[in-house]
Image (cartoon, rainbow, N blue to C red; front, side, top):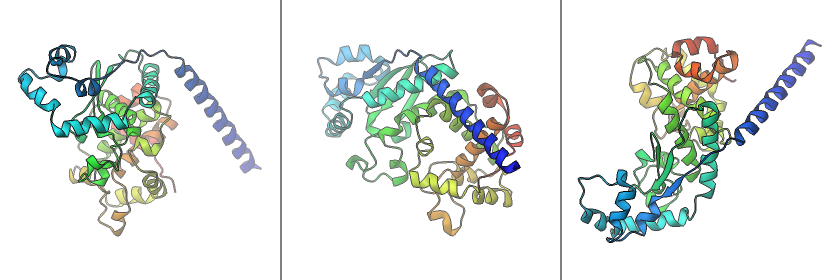
Amino acid sequence: MLKYLFACCFVFLLLLSCADNDRREEEISRIGIDLQVERFDQRFANATADSLPALKREFSFLFPRQYPDILWVEKMNDSIQLELNEAVASQFPDLEETEEELERLFQHIKYYFPEETIPKVVTLTSDVDYRNQVVWADSLLLVALDTYLGMDHPLYMGVQDYIKKEMRKEQIVVDVSEAFARTFVSGPASRSFLAHMIYYGKILYLKDLLIPFKSDAEKMTYLPEELEWANANEEQIWRYFVERELLYSSDSQLQTRFLYPAPFSKFFLELDAEAPPRLGQYIGWQIVRQYMEKNNVSVEEMINEDAETIFKKSKYKPKK
């Protein structure tokens, strides 16, 4: 009988939570956003030596003063640049889908952070600089479209597979949400592995709030099967960290092994070839999620709370 009552209470609370989420999302959807998107990539692709001065005046922040006009004219006619222009025009003839997702992201930002200014979005090409796909700079958001052409695009030949996963147009709004989150979440105050895990966990939790329309796999920049592996092995990952006393270690190699982009996480076990990268981020995310579930705190309080307190108050237990 008690089990039945417990199950009924759980279902009731779950339905109540879903209803609250639905009401919140409906309220967020009514927030007005003045989205401004400038296709600098198209403007530069169609520019000539004669139109260059006007383009420079309009987008002065993209033309460093130390570079003479002749350099930009040469770039307009460079074969690699022409190939980039063609690839971007083919993959992004319009930005309707991306703009819809950006608008939804900005609505969520305005809901949770009403004082924030929505930036002007400028799309461009960057010679496939996949280390700087998105730049959030105060009132400007720069998006390098040539880094989102798709995993199998011929221009990415030679790029490692684990990097190509990040080069899909579905990830644009995910990367923008992360760029925003990084402006709010301060770096780890401690050198411990736990502090770094929870730093990334805070960023991923903000993604939960800001892009709920994206899957957990997309938030982690995982393929679906990689998230399935992480979910299925959460308990084993946590046991590995605990049994080897890694949580309070200041060994910087742990960040390389479990937090930074890589082909896989490095346990130095046979399962390494199966394990997705950045599993330390994944565990940090689950800790922050459980902390928010079990404690009546605001998003701002979570952002400013120290890692040790979050860990203790989360009473974290991995899924079995």
